[in-house]
Image (tube, rainbow, N blue to C red):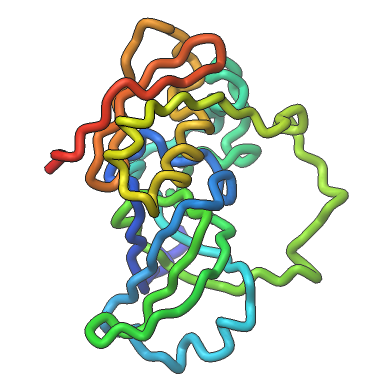
Length: 231
């Protein structure tokens, strides 16, 4: 048996998602989302980021820290297929894998040199839970990483499905102005499990310090409550 390969957590993601419900199913789907990457003390050396700001996008390699299991299954049910069809785990991006490792492409918004936290990387379009451990950061190289002719497999028919979002002005006013576009974009991606179609059901989603409740009927998502008192 091969000896385990040690992995070091180099940083932690700080995002608007304290729970898994509502996180975009892929990175880049909601470009308005802003997140911050804070390094562990051992890696707060500005020299480690020298040259990074010359790139527009980054690869993040991270842990599905809330999906760690002792066992694994060779097949999973991708949400894109309605959760009703099994595909091979290695043909999907399911978190339920032999090794719970995620890969995301994000846009680099800038590097802040914080007096206490050292260099903090600000990114947009991330699909990571708040507190996600990050194993590595690599630059996205457009001359080799972009493949416009690539085949999409069973996702090829996906055409950017979005819901129409009805957000009453009095409820939208409870959302900080800088978060409104991002929250609306997340809701438009339809946070519900793909197998749930109950138009009477009220769903709840945590976004930052907010609890947002909504219903979905005929491809229209309507926000019905925003509670800013979540602890």
